[in-house]
Length: 240
Image 1 (tube, rainbow, N blue to C red):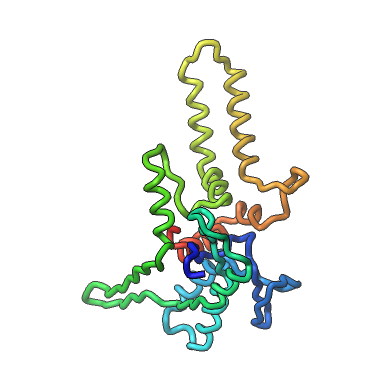
Image 2: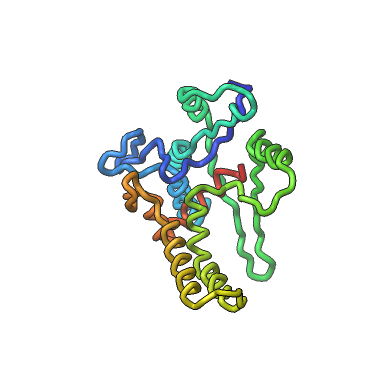
């Protein structure tokens, strides 16, 4: 297994393999009270821990949280792209079982008559975590634009929704170009089409074509949950 290329990242919101229950147990069954262990969980936990600070948790509680975070991780396998054999499910599970998670706190010491004393921690990820994407982009060469490494399908939908007003304004500006044969009716139709398309691109559909009862659609409507998710992604994916 040592020759396989893989990275360990936070599980996307719809890919949780484990659930945390009210009694503190963790298993792979959601049941009636299971909380998905994924990047949203990690991000929400980080916000809470940031408020508590390093002295807010006893060591035993911190150990439990580290185990919960470990269960919120997943293995992304790049072995096939590098000419090797894909990791099996058992091999992925074994990698995670042998993964240690350590939660550390950055510190800020407030001082009255001197500048505050801050400690920032630059976490350098293990080999291949950055190397794989670095090589892919070097091989790709120059091109227009760049898709950030942490982009998922949901990220694109969130960004598109956040840019809706700007895109519609750009569409309205086309009316001022004075293109031959362009009419107000065509302009109205174009603006209507763009508004409807942007709205549709922000909805994740089920097999029947209707809006899915899906965590992604829930997050599309909740900036707070989207924030927790983004915190969890940037904390665990390390620009893979």
